[in-house]
Length: 439
Image (cartoon, rainbow, N blue to C red; front, side, top):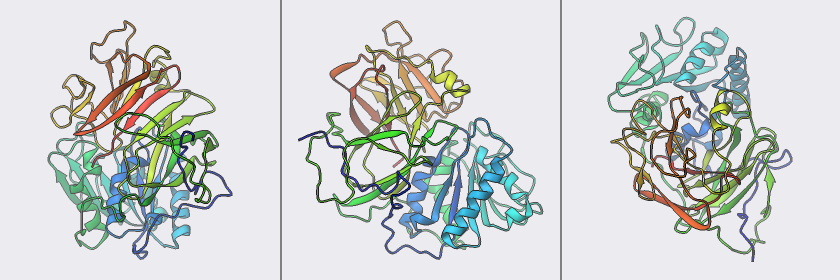
């Protein structure tokens, strides 16, 4: 017996390995490929739930793509990189056009991209979400079919409004993340791409029996920059959400390509494997440069090709903030993270043990917090006050919470009716991140 290093079929992770097989039986390969573009501090997992809704309605996983870009220090070459990416998507899918979606700062990026007439020819439909108001529909001559979705409740981008020549959708209660990730938005996305036909479902449907396998794949990148963790190391485990302990089971010797122990991301940061639909899973990420990170995930309902593992950047604005996180053998550092649903007071419920975190002080609507960093400010006491000099950015929240490290201790994390029990590892060893997706 030994710790399970999850029995997986490594489908990416090295140049010689095969590409992920996405369990796409019965999908409609005639649909145009979709390219998703995230906003500031985002990555491809911002789109995970919408991609799974599309696949629940017959879209093929291998025809949906996310463009990851450095939203912190955007360069003039970003438009060119997006163009190269779209060309590669068309080559892989043998399509003459794509459908394009941009959220927040990604909307500005897409508008600039489409202002080139040759670029505009490659895009059949463009959807502008939670981004600034533009004068006309996309394209140099407003020639690209454009939908514009914005919300009155968006506290990050407050300049949304109707765009001349576009199909305009105004939501009333969606925050800056929900305007891109909600079921309501999905209906509009699907209809715009499919001649006003409604989707069969807005839910994420599991097409498999319990204990069957789905594909889990994504990337290892640096936070905000989205630089790939090229050939950096990671390990993966199944864990028990009631105890936080890694399971002890024998290696599945019948599974070809199964592995135990450390492996590496591919050069572009990608990875992929198969996992049962009931498994809670943990990643231990060990970058060549930077701190070790432990990621804890809930079970997948269906194939997810946008699982992202972020390491801390080594330089720049974000690094300056994250360098304040202690490396202490006596305390645990925890991050509660939701890539596609902000934690907002009055709307969401989040807590660690008996300490509420979704309070007006910590999680006001104006913060649109998707990541709550919890650690002690140095006095060994819990005040549950925002940490000074930490997270002046939108989306990043913090609280002064002292979590004693304990090799035998656990902590219980609550998020909108769901729970995980996790170990209390010392921050000198690494940072722990509990990941919850919107249901």
